[in-house]
Image 1 (tube, rainbow, N blue to C red):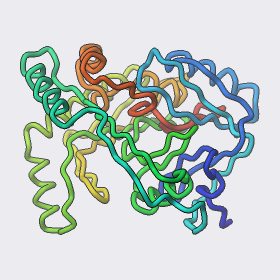
Image 2: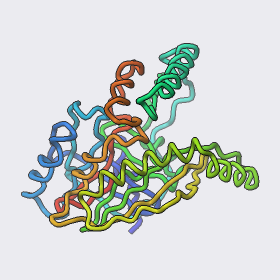
Image 3: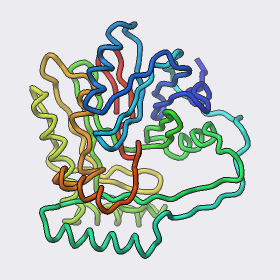
Length: 314
């Protein structure tokens, strides 16, 4: 088959794809609302009465108390994506504005460093908002094609107007197999192989980068262990390289205890990890709410899918 997942999703469908594997949906057969704590049971109950191959797709809010939603598409396509042309013309004029000034942002970062040094915070992940205004509508289809071409190793997604490409696997579940691939610790890539090798070696040798990564790995492993009969957590991270950056990554794999929780239940248990919020979690979230001055919405929240059997990827 030569069906194109991106073309099938179009501007207003749903998409979750990586490399040659993915899914795309059109239309809305069912929409399920709730917080991240409510959705796993509500989605499982809704899917239980439908065909076993039915899938619910969603991009959930960063804030666990905020209400999000998942959609069951009317039409679903799960075939290898093939890049092609077409789509509406892209805008050719843009205005980019930092919602917070550079000076204010630097002051916030400096204050956060002081707060971490003072404790009990060990890590805080801050987000900064940039507003983009274009001189014509931004075609989602064009954005998805570019993301798919530029970041083939990332999961490219489109859900209810929320579009992006993420390198990090929060969690996947296939039967009783569970996998998570936390990433934390980052260096830029220069494009020169020798320089990039030196940068990656420096990241591996950095106490700061290794500690930052260890916080994420420890948190994910600690949260997964109660669900598992076995869990393999490598002693050291590896370098995972993408087009513009390299990360430290650790692939965690295990076997789930029966009855195995669904992929959305696992995602709800894991979110937010230190990779998107910080640690200790409650203290980091409180600090972010106080100083960030930004409603993250679905940014840095889980995005993915779950089917009627509980399998899925986030």
